[in-house]
Image (tube, rainbow, N blue to C red; front, side, top):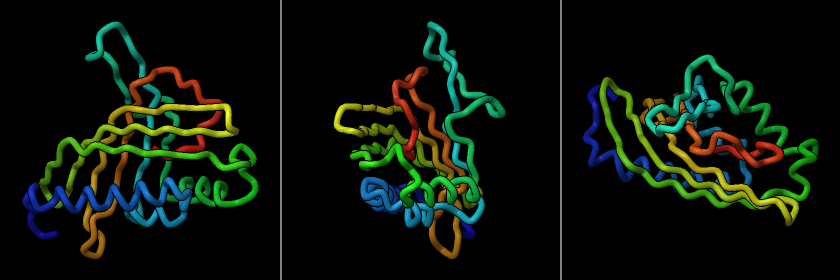
Length: 169
């Protein structure tokens, strides 16, 4: 991309990427899911701190996170979940993803998409988890395709009830 594309042109492209991504995540095809990411990327889900005011909910860089991974660590996670070594995923979780694209901005060959996310997970027939929050994706052009170079997920819940976090957000 030499110039910043028009946001109206980007909207259907980003939605199409998200629909395909959700399909792969729900099918637990994590290795193929990684193809949506740039060769070098960062995937973060920081642990947020909360005070009485919603405006004071912060997620500071460099602090503890549920995820703070790059391609190497995400490939390890994906390969483990695709193998029989992920004993917490026997039987596999049932997942439903809902992503609501809220806004897109484009500048300097970078596309930023802000979305609401809602993820339902049922595992072991008795445990149910709900994850919800905001997702900020920074896309870059890789061989004329938009790829995620940075994903930050800020969950609204400060304390998660999940016994494990074998779900990508």
